[in-house]
Image 1 (cartoon, one colour):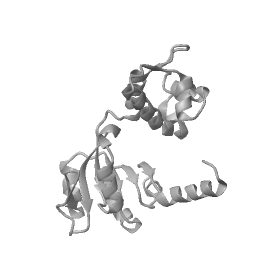
Image 2 (cartoon, rainbow, N blue to C red):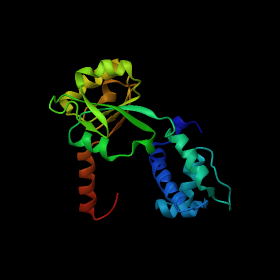
Image 3 (spheres, rainbow, N blue to C red):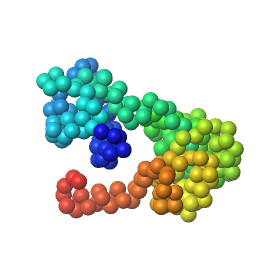
Image 4 (cartoon, rainbow, N blue to C red):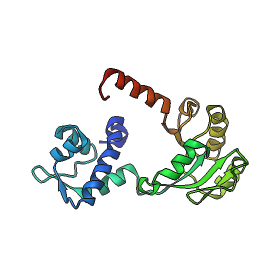
Length: 212
């Protein structure tokens, strides 16, 4: 099956497979059945087999899945072996938490630059990466290959910032703003993170007394 025909729901489950396979590997588990994976994932063995068959299978009936091999295949499928270069725009509370608190090396990404408009924090560092003046964005990106931008800025600043990045050839975004990037740039690849939406979904689930 062509990867561009695989549903988003399957793709969104792959990081969970990866996370649980890493845990199994750390516990010296060599092989895992679809039933055991289903138990860990809180789904069905049939769903596990369907998901993995989208990418070629990797297992044998009655034999299970080799944990390390399957983990490495998922690394390749997700592109975690590519070492994509990222810049982070906005070193406020959210941007700082992301840059300081996430292990991007395990996610196939390296943050190579952090930018902000607040001159009071220029020169400060987050995880040994210096916070630079947003006005140096063009010169930095021309000198340093950049694959993706993390946007942790107010919505009112997003349109101009995205335009600058897009004109620099950056079309991949992890977007924490409420700015509709794809509406303006249809060929952009965007993963939107709306924290307020997630909070409201949690409120709904609490109101209904159940998980999603």
